[in-house]
Length: 281
Image (tube, rainbow, N blue to C red; front, side):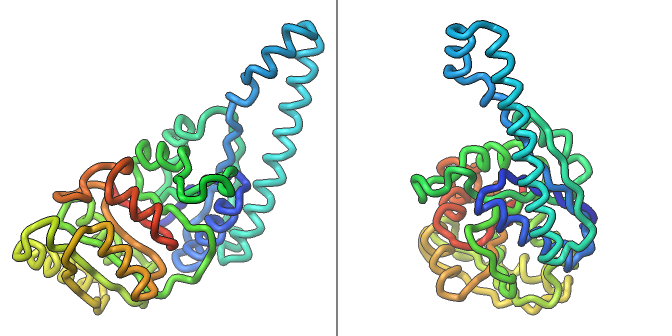
């Protein structure tokens, strides 16, 4: 892993995301690019349109200019804080910052090209409202990204135990291969589970053995277990019961973990698990 793209909006979740990014950089030597995107739609809200109609075009342009200037200052403050957090968490001097105006999902296409991993918090600036709802920006980014995405939680905890939820799908195979080859997680305790119930028990066992073989080649001595029931309930319970610090899973698969994000096992895991979730397409 050589380069990580970190999406920040200055929220509590984004600050924690920068901590995890710094932690990963410290373990891998990866460079960080922290991206703050000013949403251009905030300059097109009805309030501004109303002001332009009632005040005339010149005062409107002056107000718009002031708003843009304030947003530029805000972006600078957010990015400097993000740089500090990431540096203190382990990235040191390996941090770049970028400010763009547009839509994050559109900017993502350009900026993720040189990244091995995309990171963002699971919620954004409105995180104190509807606390069980996922951030709409997060959902769109995970849909749009062609890179592995690490969706971080509300609080930071150094990662010591990982859980790979494996169902034999192509995205899960990529996840297992990534774990086996990445320096980021070497020496950590790795758990691997499959869930029978969504698929045949014999097939689940075959998948479990397949995943075990891959991660053992990477130097892990995994704790492997076949669970029974629905993936959402069993994986979530396993995370809590075994003090797992990060969940790794595919966004696509052969079973109920096959639909990308909305209405899927993936969504439920991000929503209910209080740990970061590393997703593979």
